[in-house]
Length: 248
Image (cartoon, rainbow, N blue to C red; front, side, top):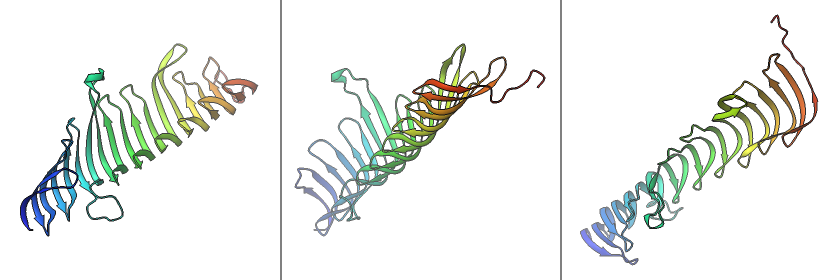
């Protein structure tokens, strides 16, 4: 059967559109039992590109796996935009939305893409199997900015984070950490610069000084200290490795 027609599919969905050799092929509309509506292009009985609209207002617009036998058919694959409506009024959950624009592979975010949430949080970078993986940049409405490596959804590797409105004594400003991360926390070798100009360069673990590191303080007479730290507490130190004299 060729031409335009109406087909009742085995999963209870109905198709209206072009048919070639008895299969959906060309432009057509499919309505699923759960209310999902797909409008777009079909190839040999499978969705190829178009838009899925869901009953809650969410939608996907982009390409799908109609021609690649390596992956499941009729799932998001290639490049597309997914807008997800969040929140449940019945549970007094505030409404919002998440918008992802980028690559997909076998129904999951994969490749380069940007995820933006209605509260202002945004991640732009690499994805693998639906999770941030590789290099990416994260920002939030409070001003936090992380630029670095990720491992399956967690900051891991090397990266720089800037934390605004950080209080150091009487100073309020931005704290900057640049260095290594382990499972979402500062870990390994890194450098911390505080709002008052004080800095630390050395070993850290679980976001605490841990191991050997240099700490430079900007008091009346700036000094640099080499200190042996244990979970944030100094256990041995050598002071004034460098010091400016008053005439400098």
